[in-house]
Image 1 (cartoon, one colour):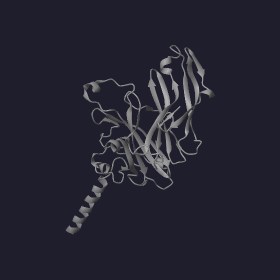
Image 2 (tube, rainbow, N blue to C red):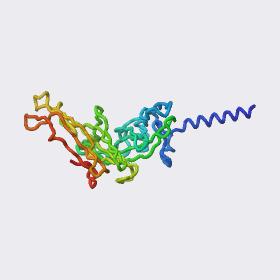
Image 3 (cartoon, rainbow, N blue to C red):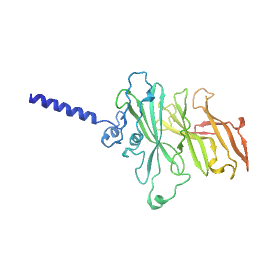
Image 4 (tube, one colour):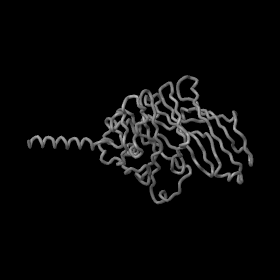
Length: 309
């Protein structure tokens, strides 16, 4: 009888230990990722409930993705204690920027983007004002939905500390939550993602898109990893904060519809077209209405690895 109780107690301890050993926020480490799998005890403490999937027909996008602090942890391997922005090394800060769920080639993915400010050495750099041209390094962690009915449904596929750089004043462009992201799947097996952004300077809000390419099959291998930032485009502006209802200058506001035009050769990245509407300042004290002649197109430049007019 004593032997049976001892055996039951041992089994209970094993079960409790197995339940405690789980990676952060519903995401499991990639196979062979020893750094991610061996540090679960120091991973972000913030946990969220992951909805269960009653059947295979439920929309995969309804499953809660890895949390922002988990994305940061997977990329930078430093625990932020649940924060979505925190200091890492030598005055450098990391910040969660944007998360995107998408289907591609029969798989369901989630990519969390973040950015890191430059390191600062010495008192002069520490006390220097923000540089208007001070860019940040964009990073990403990509997960695949592999076990939708599991408490940890997402498997880490890769984490990359540098996808490219952009921004100003030591921060990335703000996400424009009034617009939706857009994407285009190429015939050669890549995904072009346009993330809606907005910036503000001298009383003018400027709308645009940051463009990224996802190339898991390495059709056009640009880097060691599979995401790359390939430029930003402007789609509209609004000077409401500067015009003071027309007392300082004419008020002008414009927006732009984004479209992807298939490449003539049939494969490769598309041409990006922006069809504007609204008004712009055309001369001192005057505005004009935008029309067909203002349609702008951007083509991908392979040598510069970016979209240019």
